[in-house]
Image 1 (spheres, one colour):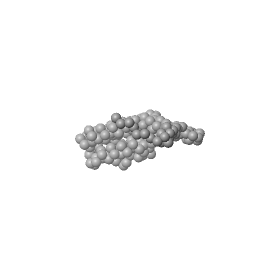
Image 2: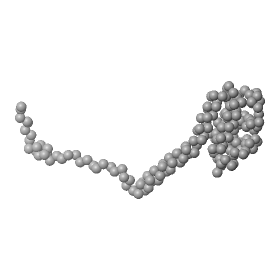
Image 3: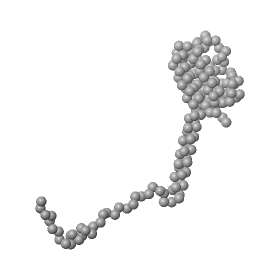
Image 4: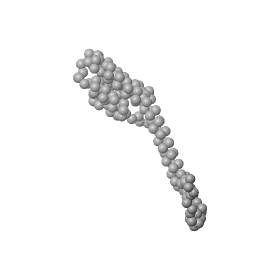
Length: 170
């Protein structure tokens, strides 16, 4: 090995006096003023309140999701083959959905034109469903089967619209 090259004394002195680079301390994530801390707390509280309200709304609307699932089942199983059965099941589903949303004493005894009026004022159902619901329980199967083609589909669409859009007045 060869000996290292000799440096002049000034260079050696300069190299010995060098220090590491001074790194500044990391920037703190803590807000420097109280205003930002308060704003952060308010934002967190609002976010938490929004999550809680969304969870409550999701829980309150469980009956709607179940009714839509049952309506899909009615449409896929009986709507084409047995229109009378499908219409009765749709009417029953709408009534059960109303009973889940409103107090039993307010909804259970309503029938006929009053029932159609209730559905119209609470969310609207469409003409096809209104015409069927008005006196459905009194019609024989033959009369229901003789209804115009597409009546079951229109009734299902009206029921779906009412289930999704009805509003429960407090």
